[in-house]
Image 1: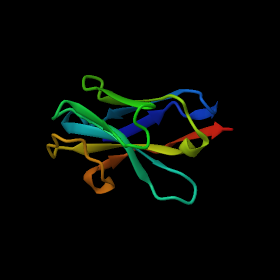
Image 2: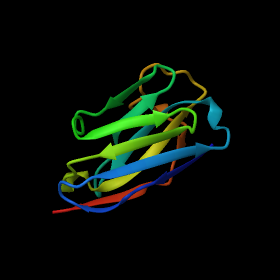
Image 3: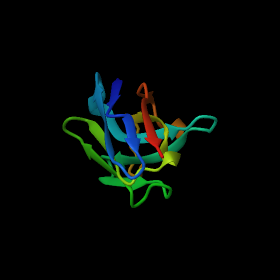
Image 4: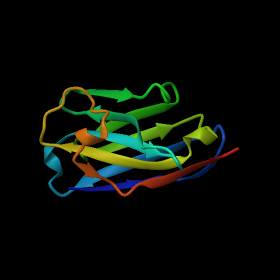
Length: 126
């Protein structure tokens, strides 16, 4: 399974960006995909994700109301619509996929994911 993330860039405070992550390879067995981010000097943290097994999405409290997670289980792609961006949102954003193991809830722990994308940089200037 390969994950290709795109959509990162530089944006001013209050601006918007949409990230996408497309899966390929043996992607038909993916049942959940998620987004994590890692800011300089900080640990990687869960942002949100989608479970196709459960038919639901989940976002971390820190981004609720500003970020929207969505997924396309035909294209096996997950999207992260980010609005009202703040400088604290500056980070490398990684997408991840849970493969084969059924998960009705959206996994929120790194160890629950089997494959990772290369990361895409999001920079929010003040």
